[in-house]
Length: 450
Image 1: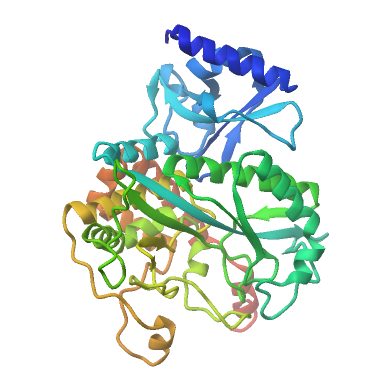
Image 2 (image 1 turned 90 degrees about the vertical axis):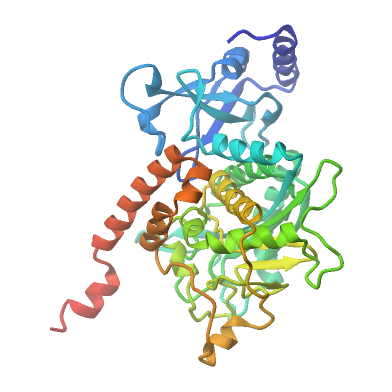
């Protein structure tokens, strides 16, 4: 690839700027099919190569690339996005960089960041911009001497722990280190709070356009992993580590604007302040919800969260029914002032793939004018307890969700067949492995009874 003079100058300017700050290495970071951050350390002085050709990785060593063990397309190249370079406050001398995946000199169809960029080009052609705000919920865990997972803060034991200040006081050093690191990295923080489960927290920051929001969440996660380790804890995105406690979601707050910055989903005259396009987008989400579950709730454990289970706090926010409503947290889609809160995703998802699939489903609803049911104006948990007819349920397990994606040709074509083929194959294998495993629960209940 030939670099223009201006591009070469920009790369050299970045080298000079970062060198002056004491940076000697770059951490080119991408994510695998599971949404797990991957990368390696490379010299800053070779930044021209990392930007134009990319940092090389063995393709078959990365989950979901579909690359072979030989030939020009066996190597995965992560091309550094120049404007993403940020010095990492917790790794002195190292700058973080976001990468796009390439193989054989071409964008890699199984790269989830390329997947999202492809979807965003579809709305850019219409002059639209997708804005996404995410709500990261997570647990702080620790393994004991026996290898059992438990809360890092053993004093965190309230039945209803939401907004517990004592827990915040005990864990303030972790939270403040997160504040300092995230602020240094350019996050506009909005709040930090103790969530509804013991050992669970949420850190909120300002929304952004979709690609930047996904990049920022990946940076949030690698920062949280590093800071938690400094405090002898594990930052966990496992959706539901404790059976009797609420799980961790990763709610998407979604809105579209046109070329003049006007909200496309909003109609002030409507009862829910939703426009026809907004209703169409919601219709697409509900219509494709079963298949979307595979990408937004992609682990066996995700469906322990997506269940009508009791909670030690007395409250569960799990969105198990395919419905939408005005500020209704018991629905899959919560409508707030002409904005759509998509409550299906959890913290274990590959955020690029989840946003890409969500956008593809919503656009299908708009383009095909899919019908939308009446809005839900009641607590669906109370309705269910009364034995009344209910909206459709999400898939009960990962196997059914993956099967729904495999059978949804419209959504697979819209997302990208290469990525979906890899995803379905790997997740089907994961489900089979789980189904064949013998759990401690089974041993306790069956080993000696018959």
